[in-house]
Amino acid sequence: FFREVVLPTDPAVLIYPKSAVGTINTYTPLEFSTSRQLNGTLIALYADPYLYLLNDQTDTICEVNLGQVNKLPRWPYVTQWSPNGRYLAMITTASLPGSLVSFNELTLLDTETGKLQQLPIEGYIQEIDWASDSRHILMQVLLDQSMLPPIQRLFLLDTMSGQVSKVLPDFQVGGGTGTNFQMAWSPDGTQIAVKCPVWPTNMAIIEDRICLIAVEMKP
Image (cartoon, rainbow, N blue to C red; front, side, top):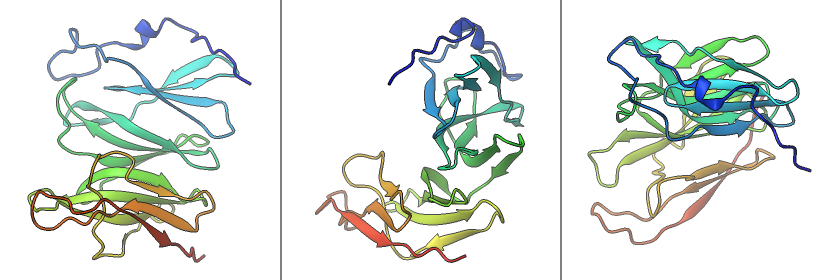
């Protein structure tokens, strides 16, 4: 059931200076992360500041140019394929290699047409997850980190129209023990699971919880 894939080139060749600001000659990514196209042949390989698409049927690899922000290359640190395998959604940023991330945005790649969309979102995107229709993306966004608890909300993006809307605007999500994998959309699209701890206005968390949100998608 498993097939070993050998890159058509030495992985070290994939790492080369990209930034016009400063130098990255002394910086090497610790490793490439991967995400596989659902029921497809493409594998995304990504690291600061690179994005490659590997076709494991033809054993070919190509680099994807995501553009620049302030002369720094844009790169993804979170990627997720749409259920139909056509779109690659990415949380992207641009920074000096190896430095801390100061902002992010949502970038969408249509692998059939090659079209790229950069979708700036108000706040800091924590997580993303596709709806089963391969059109809508749910985002958990940090709006204010100075508050206790930090203000985090859910937003829904329609990738066709670019419209962003709040989901349950007054519903506080995220936080608690652990900071990753705080939400998930069910494969049939009818429910969203999200962390919703009982967290008063101090550092102590009374109770860690998971809430289920019923979803009704309207055409």
